[in-house]
Amino acid sequence: MKLATQDRGFFGESFKEKLTKVRELGFEGLEIGGNVLIDRFAEIKQAISSTGVPISSICGGYRGWIGAFEEEERKKAISDIGEIFRYTAEIGATGVIVPAAFGIFSRKLPPFSPPRSMEDDRETLLDSLNKLDVLAKEAGSTLFLEPLNRYEDHMINRLEQAASLINEGGFSHVKILADFFHMNTEEANISESILATGNLIGHVHLADSNRLMPGQGHIDFESSFNTLQKIGFNQFMSIECEISGDPEQSYLDSAAFLQSFIKPGVA
Ligand code: LER
Ligand code: MN
Image (tube, rainbow, N blue to C red):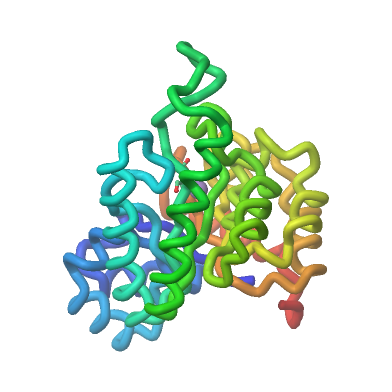
């Protein structure tokens, strides 16, 4: 398992500075937005080659959502993500992280009833994923489908819901992103959910129960990391956190905390 992190202002301005800082802090990769990847592609490519530190993965940075209610917004998402796949593959990053939607509706907040039925949500998502599976395959990339908590999305909240869509569609280039912050709210037992869907998990997001750095909340990372190693998960896990206190010290402490649960020589 390899530790990565999303980009932070204190890593520096240039990508050479950012990637160098990521390594100094104990991480093996940097996760960035798709728009940044495209806008600063030449610089990023050069920085990867001069530092030897990879871009692990791409998160966001496209228009619309694959589960948008408006057809135009959904088309924009498919077209943008399709373009991002090509850049992602060219720099050797693992794939593009995509939730069904973020913040368009919550069944737990007023007005409580979404403007589309559950059946139509599913059909819409299967259609988007079907198109993106083809584009990911053509580009040599992967879509990481991310369940979000009930307040951020009403369509995919748990790993098994993502797995069910992938299995129904028979998608070869769609995997699951397991985000600890969301799993802490939605999964009955994080380790059991990882075991049940582990063959489809392609990427992990790391944050503690309060979305601070791992070690600053109450998630039991040790047992879940043991499970991930047991199923042979050997991909990137990236920090997606708010920071409290000194950013650099928080990163160093969290890297040491997480590394203490990664057994040397295992996945
Ligand atoms: C949003 O809460 C989140 O976890 C992001 O990774 C969305 O892609
Ligand atoms: Mn996430």
